[in-house]
Length: 287
Image (cartoon, helix red, strand yellow):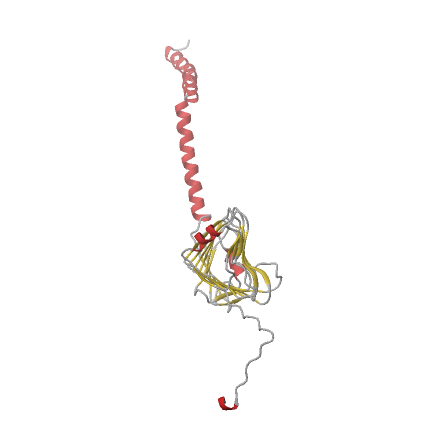
C-alpha cells in the first residue's frame, strides 16, 4: 500500500510541466521582451562595428611628400597622388618633374615653396601636363612649362577646381581646357603663353582674381572666348598682349562690365616698314 506522502510527491511532480508551459508561452508572446532583446543586440552590433572601423578603416588626413632626389617616400608626383585619399595633401619639394599628372578623387597638390616646382610637359602634345577630374580639387604653387608646342597646360573635368599661385609658361595653345559644366577659380596666377587662356561654354564657370595674364604670341587674340550664357568673373587682373576686345563672344556692354576693375595693357606689335622711304644721310658737317 502506497503512503500518502509518496502520492503527494508524485502528484506535485506531474503538475510542474503544466505550470511551466504557460510561462514559456507568455515569454515568447511578449513583444516587449523581444523588443528589448533586439535593442540590446543592435547596440552591441553597432558598438562592435564602430570599434572595428575606428581601428581598421578610418585614418586622418596625411601629408605625402615627393622629392626628385629620393629624400622622400616618392620621386614622382603621379605615384604620390595614386597613394593618397580625399583629404590628403601631396607636398612637392622643389625640382622639375617631367610627367603628366592626373588628379582624380584624391588628395590636393601643393608645392612646399610656391613657384619652385615645375611640371614639364613632354611627349604627346594632345595630353595636358595636369589633368583635374576630382569633385573638389585644389592645386597650389605649381608651375607648368613645356619643352615644345602643346595643346593645353591644364585640362579640367571637375565640378570645382581651385588654382592658387599657379604659373603657366611655354608653348601652349591654350592655358586651360575647361569642360562644360566645370568650374574654375584662379587666384594669384601668372600665365604667359602665345595662345589664349580658355574657351568658356554656356554652362561653364570661371573666376580669375588678382592674376597676371599675358599673351606672348606675335598675333594678338582674345584672352577668353566666352559664350553669352557662361558665368565669368574677373577681379583685379592684369591683361597684357591681347587684342582690343580681350573677351570675345559677349556684347560690348557685357565686356565693359567684366573688365571693370581690371587693368588692360594694349598689345604692342612692331609696325611694318614703310616702302619707298630711306633714312636721310647725315651731311659732312653734321658728322
